Image (cartoon, rainbow, N blue to C red; front, side, top):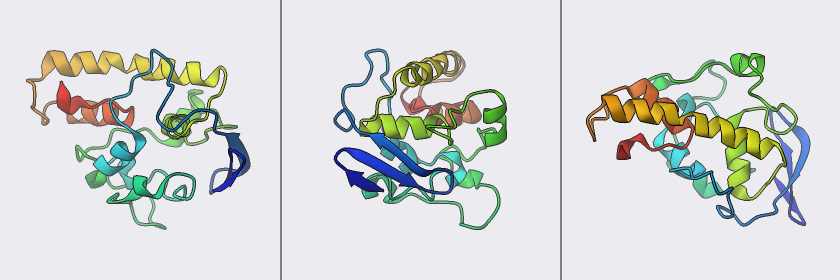
Length: 175
């Protein structure tokens, strides 16, 4: 990462010479209808995406986001479900995300969580922010299913659904 007058230059495995601007304070001034339960740092430290996601992006974000984060070994194919908070797989391959049109390959080729990290840091993208927030809000149906079918505090109930919610910054430990 290189900061140049509010701009971030990204060079990682999935983006080369991508530049974006930070226009809002870190963690502030979110859209009024976007209220995630967890910060990107909290998500990473709890355990998301089998420890595979963003291993090569550490220079783009604050180093404290990666303290106590366990990553799947570099050079080893796949991911480690045991690194997820709920110890289950809850992701589809990136190829599925691309096929379904969920990826904005120009700005966030890794998907929603990459968008959220950059949004949290202060980047704003007209149109794309609305699209991603709409996708985040659609996860409310899973919140309702966990709340309806699980006893409060029973983290063994619907672990795959809970892990998926965690991937979207919802904290199912509280409902």
